[in-house]
Length: 438
Image (cartoon, rainbow, N blue to C red; front, side):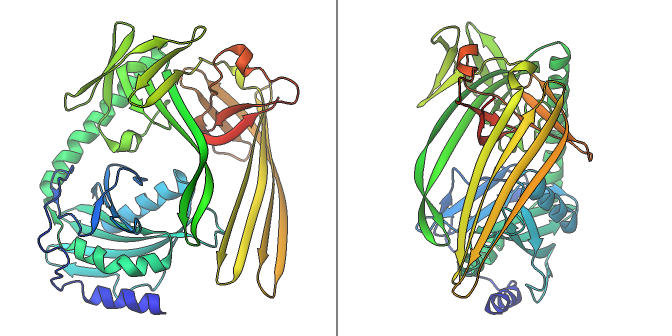
């Protein structure tokens, strides 16, 4: 109740002239037709983007969370924009998203030429997530466009502490709907041209030339229970796509959503220069990637502190076999602890069929109750692999399909060969932490 009362008090205070941002600097906005002042006590973050398109992210100078995100505006009204954002969270992020009801005394506020819609979202990694993250969206609607402003936190306590600042930040935002629409039209045309160039490139028989780096280890991660040591496995890529298009750290090479790949920036172009590549961004900046000879027939690219290794072209036969992963998570809240674990095996058969089997277990403990449940799931369907784009597609018998990047950094056939009871690490359906054992 305290949480809801605080929201209601802040909404009632929306029209007040908050002085939180007095003397703040006008931000360098990347969005035509949108301006704002940098929020006091915060700095632009070089991480935490996690946005469906372009966005600017602020984090606290002392306490990182809650974050503030300024998303790219969309044509349409606020309810349509909310549907778009939630669809991205569910489909691209795999989240379980719920709109918290009755969080506000007023969910829609008229403020001059703006109409502001307030939505409070609970965002879990799965339906039974007991420690979800939260987003407060202020969807600012004016002249047929909607600008999403988001406050993002890891707990309700974080949200309570930062909501007043989010409201104050809104009061510095100015919109020019005509300029926004013109910019979005130009960008839409550029994305359409890029999609057609990629399609034409694949039709000519061109293939992705892919380079990747990876690192793994453990690091401290902030959670609702404080700092915890967590394992990590990071991957970065340079993809020289058919049609002369370039993507860095992309998740889809076959038919990428250009509005989300590359942080939503307009696509860059590449051309061969000697044995390397020259990449040019839409604003004319160029970067040259020199290709070096490594061991055997493999090549590499050094870029800054990273070394990107060439990924071998693969065939359908290379992906036939058993892919596996394991997972576990734990959380605690108000004396109740939850622990989940499980494993998944996906077998790609030579006849084009696949079998997906998994086991999971969840236990909940509290001072008075201890309970646990287990579950076994099996499904099957058809699979196909496109070597030109490193894309695996799974089509379950029940309908629908999903696709994702699938490859290994083992370059030679001997490195990919599974010996005895060993295994080889793979990126499977765009997911890290998988291995191939047969």
